[in-house]
Image (cartoon, rainbow, N blue to C red; front, side, top):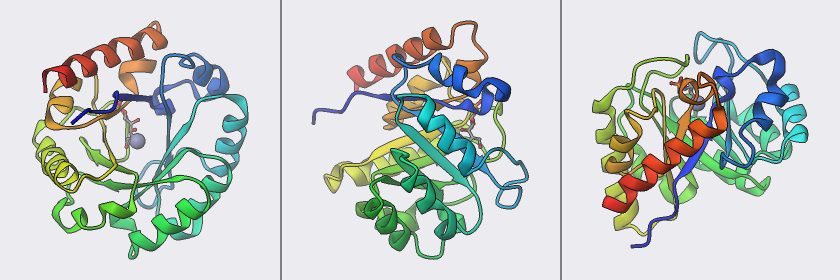
Length: 226
Ligand code: DX5
Ligand code: ZN
């Protein structure tokens, strides 16, 4: 099977929040998507940004937005991000009692629909739902904070999802998020991920665009070996 080119999505969680538009533009031309972590201080203890900031940022950059909602009650809030023009809107399985219905709403609003699986959630109950989704985000840390250490054991979920996606000929990106850097991206790609979120590894670097290019190179190299 001809695998699609890997997606690299810098997370602005690790960027300078006083200069978000400049930080977003710093990876234009290098990144595929811009990953935005929305946290509500309820689903996760941390608090970040919400819809008004995302709306302004979408207007300020040409990158497709990959919105990662770490919030309670996504049915209420998620469609607003699709209406704002986000390319992909991902909500957490743990926060939703009807993921398929919300995926339908997101697609109807013109966005791709993403399902996120946190560290302690098994993947198996969700595999059957994947035809309703465009992206599957598998956390490789516990959701909530940037800068945590990558947990290699969580790649078993990526492998299980990859087997299921390939066997069912599903068109679905498998995205990993948490601790993705030059020393971890290849093992994630080997496990079957084809979209990579990186916060610290991009915005902690002197040249964020160069860091994105380097990560892409490593992911491509791993994909070519597969
Ligand atoms: C954490 C967020 C991540 C975070 C990753 O819950 O979902 O997107 O920005 O940061 P790093 O790449 O530093 O682990
Ligand atoms: Zn994220």
